[in-house]
Length: 382
Image (cartoon, rainbow, N blue to C red; front, top):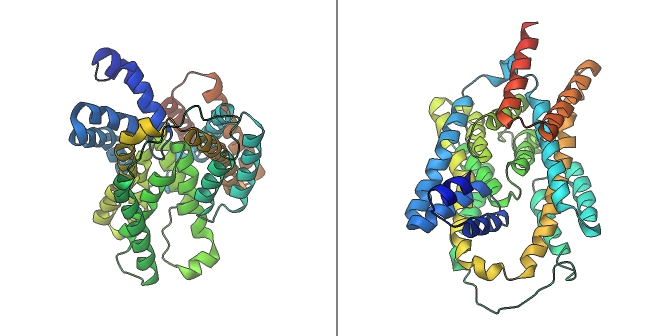
């Protein structure tokens, strides 16, 4: 769509520029499609047009997901199959990522280790950044697969990244202070810290964002040890979580807009005004790192892309991402273990059917979501 609109029809950028933007954004954490559009706006009109482009691109989806946060999802039977359908989407994404990212022995080893580590330590929030850093480090130990063709000792100015880092540190510190000192109105701070951290660490788009959000909002609040230390921990009901991820697949726009929904649901019990504030904070927190990173790093992109170290690190990071997706899918299937054998088999059938529809049919994702919603409505009637 970008090629057709911005290259062939409007001629805002050339085909080579668009492909360069896309390759650059794949190297960054955050919403890559959003970052690519932001760069197109940046090229045409500088920072002001870039920010307007970002707002216009994200606003419709964020508003729709914010609206969905006001619906009583957990009592609505039509969402019966949305949970296993979401795992089916994740299984398909993991398969596609496996085909692209797992190509040699070292990536297979990283995949196995990251899958096991993520599954066993899923409730430990530091497991994701640690695995990503380790994966990038390990694939840089060998220079044979991706050799350094040329070394240009150009100086890179890192000063522009300070704003991103300062916000990251302040958000984390404020969230910890609010928790330890039991601030009465700390929840907006925690929502911003959570979503800003997601936007800063997610490599691989929405399919990796989902397990990170599940760990933060659903899995961690189930830990009794954590509840004793923090009885007011931010939590999202499992049914609400799956429903939100199902709905974000059914609407146009960036998948990261699901943060607007999660922010609203996390603050639903405090009233309408707080819920609207949660939707706004969630959307702002998730997309702000993407904008800061892409606008700050792109001026030095032509220097960075000459260094093989960047691509070696990405090889390991992508392998870890596949492991995280596989482990998350397996972990989420634990939600079905308390159901009857009949329901377990039905959930597995939904997971398999979703995967097969994505693999062999040309049906767009919204149609598949609407199909399972319709089937849930039929089951509700009969």
